[in-house]
Length: 439
Length: 112
View 1 (cartoon, rainbow over the protein chains, first blue to last red):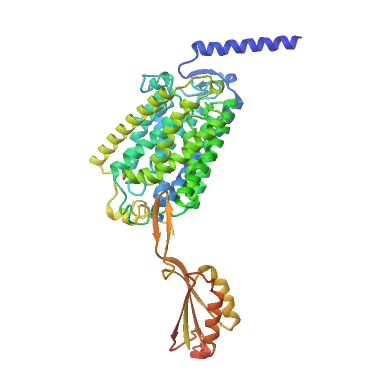
View 2 (cartoon, helix red, strand yellow):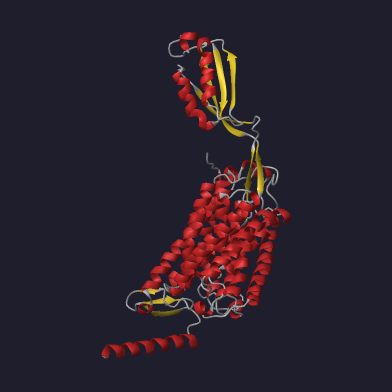
């Protein structure tokens, strides 16, 4: 009897605290006791953070590295690695604060610059800071988790301009892009004071913030840089699809941290996000493979790997909002549409998106964002979505992302130059930019 | 003395090595080469971009033989390298003027 009574009391208190959180929960990072932290949630978010970092290095690096010609493989691996390091420090300096602290409708505040105030005081207070966006885990973990997203997003862009951009110009572009494009878009979509978040745009794990954003920047950069020398005439076949398949597989595994980790907790929604991620990825891989088999005669390794990534991209915004059957549908559509985008659209339009950053991440991201509005389940997510609101999120990201990326690239081109010399490009970026080569 | 140069399908190399050993050949030199014959090349497609591979990978083997052994060796190569499909390769035979074994200084027939 006593047990039952205390059980009810506990339930009542829990309901009350949840209601309080809804009514006037924290709106900015705050200091709290360590007893408020859930060890289960924290354990999963520590794991997710490591998984998402693995997506960039070595996952994405290998995925892209295998697709370029042998003379550019080290330069391609180097880009992802260097971007990861650089964005880490930018995130510490101001990125995290601009993206994930309250501020204007477009950009966060500067209160967390240099991680100022992000603490863990073991003795004597036993307190730590917690983000208002993830109440049961330390803010250190939340900031690290988001850091890995901020790092992979610019690295994705590199697929569009592979084989021809100066390393120095690439670093400047990525630094500027991270602060002037990624941080504002992340803030607008994910931080409650952001205007797209207020408008009800749904983006569970970054379909808009990460993939549309990176894809459209990729389109801007391949238009700005122009085609690779000899494009369409010389053989530019991938030099090692084994690396590409390993990279795609690491991306797939890491993506469970990306999508299920975006629950911010080890809970039922995280489980559902993981399940639908697997469904959509398998469906998209088979979708791309089948479309290719039917239209070109052979099912290729590059095709099935690309299809898997397209499915991962498309399910990203939807993962916390949809059930498994819509996930299979989203995956199939993404596989076929991205196949068309990467194999036909780009040739028809005449731009040289070398590794299809736009064709896979841009198109797949847009598709996923829009389909999230179609398939969102209130049972799973507790929210309603709308196709039109999703369309608004897509449009804003595409327009702002393209314009801002184009402007940054234009300024770099006019000052330091974007592209390597013809001689360097012929010789290969490994030797000409890094003084190394593989045999 | 003759020098036999044969262009064969790479996966036939082991069969050919075994066949020529059986008729008494003491040494073979092998090189990986590319080229085209009636087989021409093939087409590879990567994300919609088609590349024509004009030169197909082949294996070149070189064997120096005494005149007495020539026909047997040619027959051994031709038999073991054959699949019956286009691209099986060719055998070329040249006159060989001199052979020197570097270790001993032996010449010609005894040096093969």
